[in-house]
Length: 218
Image (cartoon, rainbow, N blue to C red; front, side):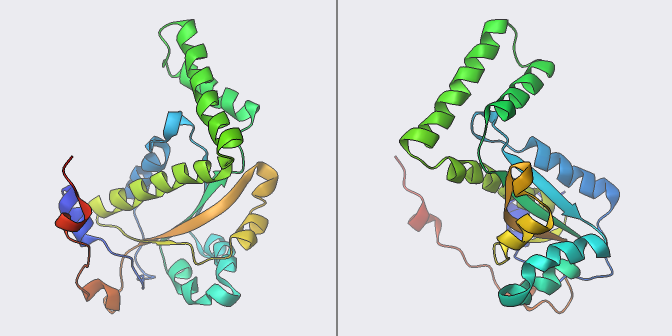
C-alpha cells in the first residue's frame, strides 16, 4: 500500500479505463469494507450502494448516462466495477431504531441508559436539520459524500483508479433500481478499475491551490 500522501498524489479522475483489467475479489472486499466503515455524523449511516461488476449490471447503470450524459458512458461500461451511491430521502423512526439496535447488538452501550442517550442525541441533530434548518435531505447526502471521499482514498492506497461522477441522470437511476420506493435516491456514481495507457488525464500534472492559500494557523 502507498502512504496517504503518495496515494493522494498518485490518484486522479480517470477518464479511460482498461476494459480488460478486473479488480480482484480480495481488493474489492477491502473497498466494500470502506463503504461500511465510513464515518457519518452521529453514526447515522444514511447510505445504500448499488454495485455493478458485469456487463448486465453496468449496462443498467449506464442508462443514467444516456442523452446529455453519454460522454460518461464509457467510464461506466469499461470500468471493472461501478458503484451507485444512494442516500436516504429522510431518516424515519424505523430507520433510527434499526441503527440503534445494531449499535446495541455490536456492544456500543455499556449501560441501558447510554442507549437512550445516543438515541435522543441522534434525534436532536436530525430534528435540528429537519425542522430548524429544513435541510434534512441535504444533511443526509453530506454523509454519503464523506463515504465517497473515503472510498476514493482507499482505492488509491490499493492502486485502484477511480472517478466520481455527478454527470449522470439521477432520476433515471432512481427509476432503474426502484430506489425511491425503498426510501433512497441516487447521489452520484463512482467507477473503479485500472487506467488505459492512453488516458490523457493520467499524464497531466496535478494542480491544487498552495498550502499558504488554503491553510491559516489559528
